[in-house]
Each structure stands twice: as structure tokens, then as C-alpha cells.
Amino acid sequence: MSFNSLMAWNFKLYRAFGIDVRIHWLLILYIVVKVLSTADKAGHIPFIWLIAGPLIIFTIVLLHEYGHCIAAKMVGGRADNIILWPLGGLAMCWCPQTPRAEFITAFGGPFVNCLMLAAGYLIRWLLPPEAPGTFDIFLSFIMDVNLTLLLFNLIPCYPLDGGRIFRALLWPLLGYSKAGFYTIWLAVIISGGLMMYGLITSDISLVFIAIFTFIQAWQEKQTGGGYVTYSAIPAARSEAPPILQKWRDDRKQKTQKREMETEKDIKSRVDRILDKINDAGMERLSDEERRFLNEASQYLNRNSPPH
Image 1 (tube, rainbow, N blue to C red):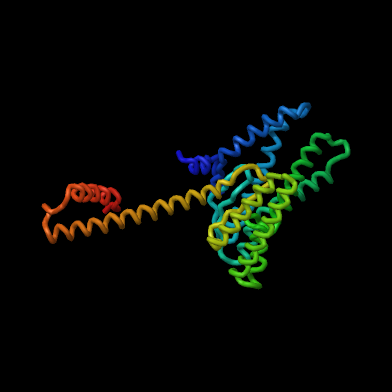
Image 2 (cartoon, helix red, strand yellow):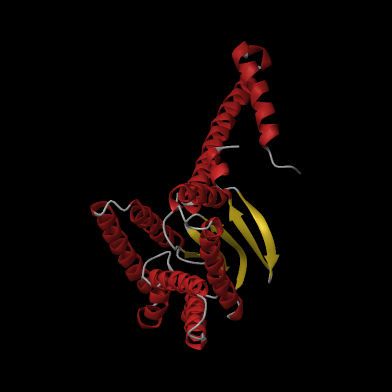
């Protein structure tokens, strides 16, 4: 298994609403390392809370991604997969190329966070004064995660929801191409600002997010939309599998191009040898030319498409 294949590896957790939910192996490793490293410093904190924290975060991220998927289906699009990985969640969605569909699909994730925040405030308002303090801590943690996820994803920067919402709002005014152009360059500026701030404050998580958002913005420029990955990033954690997948695709394209050039060179030399046979006969071929003709025949037969 190659490095890129290893980095892209994930496995299916379950399927619901016609959507496969998958988990990346790096997320499992991250949670295990995080729990073990935190347990060494936690002291009086119960071990159950060390496990519950990451699980709550990624459950909220999962619900956020479901919001995108359901919204995409509501506007006539489709959603195939949700992948949970160390940077958060990725919803693989496609929606019709209209401002309304783009806006609804992009806002579907933050809308779920708004609903959970509203539910949290309502529960807190209904709680009696004598409610246990542990429950209030638990509720506060859920609300804080939702608020962080909501505010962060509304930043107008690809691949965050705010970037697609911003483009959807500009679309009717400027047209799709110009709206995408301004959104991409806004994302580049924001990612540059995040990078500088992360370097100044020695916050490596912000540096990772800045690199990730810059590359995703550039990929958006190349693809021009279509099949969309909606991301939820509660905090930077590790490398980005989509980036590695892009490297894998580029490598595959280069390999295919190299094979086509090799095949073209082989066919060109075979044609020259066949011309020589036609002019002077088979007996005029050298041993090297005979060997090459035999090897070329085997290569071309092996790589020719089946009939």
C-alpha cells in the first residue's frame, strides 16, 4: 500500500438516509492519542469526560454535515458520503447550479448548529435553579462547541460554508464566474491573514487551517464548482486527506501521460522497423531490433484494451 493510499484510507461506520458515514483512521488515532496524553495531565478529571469530549465534538460535526446533505437533497441534489477525519467533517454533496440551491445547501450545516444552540438556550431557560451542576457543564460544553463551529464556518473562505454562502449571495448580482472570482481571492486573503497570525502567535493549528483553506480555494478555482465538499473544521488537527487525494490524482495523471508517451515512442520505432522489413526483408534486422520487436509486441498486447 502506497503512502497516499494509506492517507486516503477510511472505513464505513454505517449508512443512513442513503448516505454512507465513514471515519478516517487518523481520527481514531487522534482520539486515542488525545485521550492518553490528556489523561496524564488531567489529574482529578474523570476518565469518562476525557472520552466524552472528542466524541461530543465529532457527533456535533456529524450532525452539521447531515445538515448539508439533507439540504442538498431538498433542492434536488444528492449526497453520497460523510467522512469524519481529524480536521472535522466532509460532506460530499452535489446541488443544482443555482444561487438558491447553493445557498440552501451551504447554510444547511450552520442551520443545524443554530437549532442546537436554540435548543440549548431553551433547556437552560427551563432548567430549575436546583439542577445538577454536572448537567450544566455538559450543556455549556455542547453549546460552546456549536457556537465555535457556527462562527468559524461562517467565515467567507473556501472550503468553509461561509465561502459558498458568500458566493451564492454575489451570484445573482455579478454572475457565477465573477462571484466565484471574488470569493476565491477573498479566501486567499483570509488564509494569508490566518497564516501570518498563526506564525506570530506560534499557533500551528491556524497555520494548518490557512494552508488547507488556500489549497481548497485554489482547487475550487480549477474545478469551478460542481461536486462539492462541504467541510466543518472545529480546530486544525492533522494533514488533510483531500489534499493528499489531489496529489494522488495528479500522480495518476502523470503516470498515464508517461505511459502514453512511452507507447507512442514504441509504436514509432515499430513502424520504422516494419518499413525496413518491407524494404529489405526480415533477414536484414539486427538481433537488437528483433528483440525489441518481440518485446514491443508483448507490451502493446498487454496494454491494449480488451475487445
